[in-house]
Amino acid sequence: MEIIDIIVPIAAIWGALLSTSMLILKLYENKVKIKVDYENYVLEIPNEKPTEYYTIVAKNLGSKPVTMAYAYIALENYPSEKWHNLVEDGATGEDRSINGKQISSGQSIKAEFEYPADFSSFVTPKTVGNTIMVIGYFIDQVGNYYKSEPFEIDDKA
Image 1 (tube, helix red, strand yellow):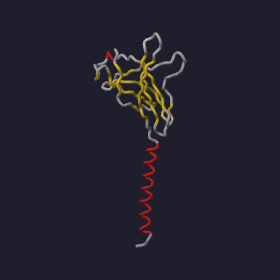
Image 2: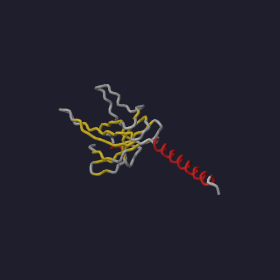
Image 3: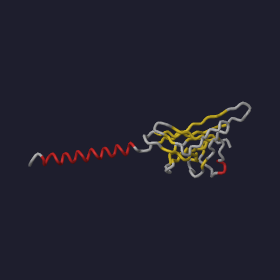
Image 4: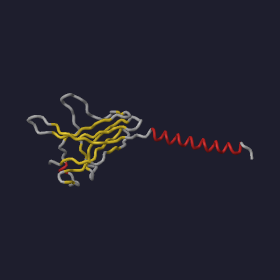
């Protein structure tokens, strides 16, 4: 048995392992990673009823940019019942639409929704006291859905 009979199979195995690991790393590198979270706040204007807002935030944790198309909030147990009250800023003329907005790596985008949503017309959702469990969703232009963990909002209706 010659030395070449030993080196060739070892080199072939080494090459196969190296190329497989590079492929796995490349697939992992290009994977879209979006984390959706939520915030809520109350805007109080003197002599007016306070307005409550719910904001869902999509943060790009991957290295590939993602272009968003749509955002909504839905009841946890009834995802087809969507809340579309996306806030439009008429005072400043700021475009708050997320359609076509790109999120680069490490950046985030917000979609803001004004309370109240008309949940009363829906099938009675799972409630905790006066709260309703909802989930925030973002949809990219390819049709992929990204969702938050369930969170509760106060059902004042």
